[in-house]
View 1 (cartoon, rainbow, N blue to C red):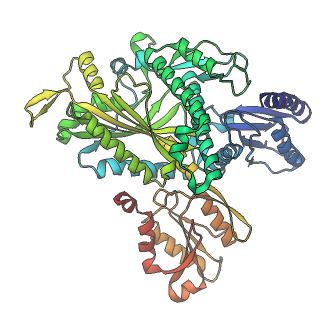
View 2 (cartoon, rainbow, N blue to C red):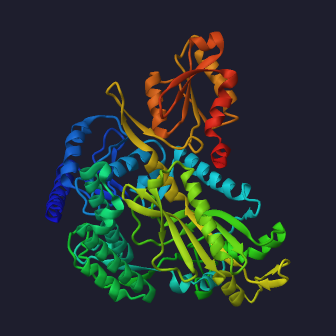
Length: 607
């Protein structure tokens, strides 16, 4: 298969030079998009053609297919943008072709329908940096507000904070980020592509788990209801062989991480025969460490004393404000401080669309507890956070806990909540027992006491901390991946629907007049103007009603209201539900009540 890919890469280079010379087309890489830049002027403008590529793996056959479709249109006068989903033919990193294609469709869908754009696209973009469009920002705001209210409104012992991005440089010395915030990197000598060594090994281990799962699925199909899954996994020779290899790899990997043994990390990669997804070769450099913090200077003089960092996490702003918040909010331990904010990491291996980027948003809550009770609270927050994620509509099979093989320098326990993305099972939230590491170090380096006087025990101590840290961008992507569907309908037609939870949808309700005459637009406007004080609404008159429904399906709008001639007679409207496409007549005086029951976050939060 690697020979197959190499062959098409060679063809791609030929295609690139041929089209550039004869047609004036420049082929470039822009973030997660494959850009064909047509240098030939069309009227007074240029045409930009963007294709989602996912992992910047290109194949000439797919490019040529698209070019054959597009080149005849070069003489047209119209200018603008055309966005086409361009499925990848083969990727060694992805075992299921339909899964790869689905993720590329999702990337294309996000741009076409105004959820996510490549940043600075008119300048060909900036790798791993994205902007949220009109529907993307609504969904993101709804998600973060749901988290914020779940934390600060539903828990009387949790308050909020918004700390600055810039902090005193000693903050990051105390937190350990200056000395320990590093990733192990490795390069493939043939492709020059850089990878995180730990991620390569984790992906290889995930493939072993997938192999075990496939063996079980194959056996289940063969034996049907008589299949005993537990017995099969405990006795099947193929499964036991893979399990033995997986357990041995996991033990070596864990020990190498704990010992910071970079030579052993490379040896594991060599022993597992991990190949570069681009070149297909196993020709690796040595593993080396790379600090992830962005540094900059403040003031007019650039010297050592003026160097500061863009924060790599939001947690430290909470720790340095611990006593300020505790005293002004008059909270007793246990209590928590929640914060939503941007963080920055110089990810060398930024990839998978918005999953791993250099600028991202965290939703964190640091829960301060009495020393000795931290594991009790750690387990309680594990349960509560998993329940919260399931309230987003994720199936139980899509979520799982993953205990850390190597604990961070500040933790005595850590677990991830992982979601099954099209590109693999990945972390969306981390829950950590941080002990008193942060507060103690800040107290020592600053010389200021960060102790709490407990009136119940009549003693002062540095509290222990249980942290829940969720990636807003990653959870956003999980919602999109979970909701994106291509459905074939009973009449043979197809539709693309984004089945988002109704209470998080960017638009809650769309109002359509059936026709642009007979007083229907005026009545529809009247209904819209009333509903917009309750929910984010959308109004449109253009095109047939079926096309308007499809556009709302594609952005995840849960309800559409159609105003027809009967509305003028009896004050009822047609209410169409997105997922079932069922339509019912509802009187206007009941409309708000019916919609509110489905889109109110409090209904979901109550369970």
